[in-house]
Amino acid sequence: MQATISSNRNSNKRHSIIYLNSPLNEAANEFATDQGIYEAPFKSKTWSKVSRLANKHHIAALKKLFPESAGIRFSDKAGCNCGCSPGFVMKHEHPNQFGRMFWVDFQASETEVNAFENTLKKLAGEFAAEREAYKNKLASKVVA
Ligand SMILES: [Zn+2]
Image (cartoon, rainbow, N blue to C red; front, side, top):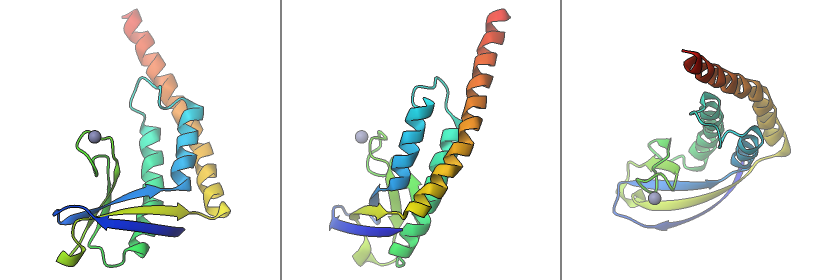
């Protein structure tokens, strides 16, 4: 993946925060909207899988982009404890790298995006099965 980075120093914290713009997140978002994942009345395992998969790509790309980092992980609460600002938390070994905020704009090739979308297509069936299982569980509760 290609990337454009901007940054500033924002805090005294020992870690930095990375916010991401990514075509994989756009594809995942489109998938979730099409499948009705956001409206699902249960916490979807398929959606967790989609997020993990996208972030696996992102973390691999970010590690190349920030070879000086001492670890990068995704966090729903990277930017705020309420969960409104998910992002990546990056640890550092050197104090002159502490406390920065990065905005990374990824550009993936069409091949990369297509490969990801094909994986998502396969996961649509898993989500359908999850929804079916949820319905059946509700139905059995009503009967009992
Ligand atoms: Zn918040």
